[in-house]
Image 1 (cartoon, rainbow, N blue to C red):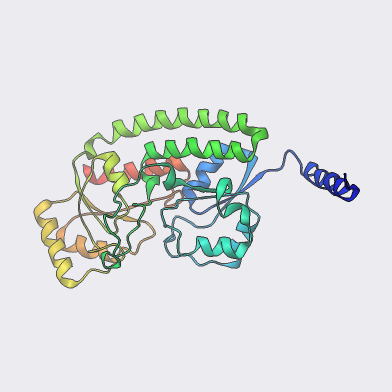
Image 2 (tube, rainbow, N blue to C red; image 1 turned 60 degrees about the horizontal axis):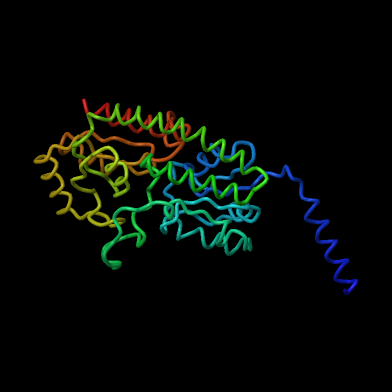
Length: 301
């Protein structure tokens, strides 16, 4: 056997062995909900950097050098997927030079772990800012969140096999607490079933499906397309005829359009946190759902 090869092999083994067994996974989470979920499942076994806040529109994020630096050192990227981050995540990965998270085990897309709603039957830019893989905002359905948690726990264990049993135990603890919370939320949300809502942007199909809310219109005629005057006049008529419970928007969204419609119809506006950190109550995943339900129930009375 070639002595140079043998020496090189031993050097490589020495380098691998020099990596501390206690080293943390470094996780780059695109949105706060995935950072929060990773922390629930990994605890102090992972160091988590979150790229965005709940008060930002994650469709429109700048690929800043600080984000490139964070993704360069990541072992795992946890994002929504379904093209939500298509305008900036591929650029970050490309500029980071981190091939380990470009695909394979180092890339985890939450929307790929569950069925998505509102997949377009055909792709046409005339239909606005549509997502070919379906609506990406899966974090607003707690049942899908539990499915995603199970898949993410398995991925963490795959990347850090020495601690796989710890990830499994933390998943079991999270699942028990989450299932109990879902039962509490669903009992509490009974008065919302069948209530009508208008929305500022079509971000809420998973919340609507879970709670039984009936969406009767959006303030955008097509996703990402500003409304015309005639369209808004039609919404005023819709609101007066259908008498929706509320106009929903995310806390990061400009309230002007919702307030305009509210002033003309008397329909209350509700700003929902949409992600962890979206308001003072939504400090973690459990608080996100508590805050969302509390705000909806306030206007359902």
